[in-house]
Image 1 (cartoon, rainbow, N blue to C red):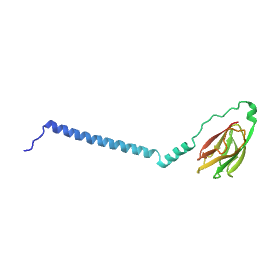
Image 2: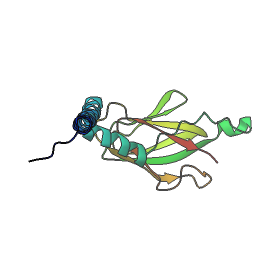
Image 3: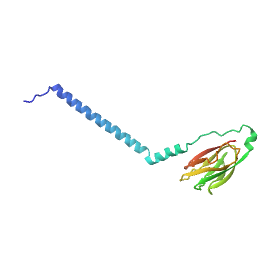
Image 4: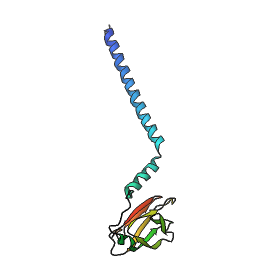
Length: 159
């Protein structure tokens, strides 16, 4: 005859099996909840593109640079910017549009401080390169490239 275990052992085994099942169900529900929340937040491709654009060209929030002396603010510099491919990117300084890169390459008269390359509303990726600049300028550097992906990039102009 087969030996039967005690009633306590039988109950203990049933409790352990029940605990294992409950833990498995809870882990599966947690994983399912996490997957559902991640898919509801954002399309994976859009998430990758936004992260990649921030890594390639991080936005710089720079305050407007005040000139050291009043004579420096009156100084005008010449730089040449080239947009590849040509796109209607606005070049803005002190809230005024001073140029448009719709033709691709544009020579611009600028003052020391900060300018913005405004590509809002442009659906493609555009590279804006500094082709020529006055030799007395430290920034922007010769052949420096700014990536515009429907956003605004800041460029510092300093002597």
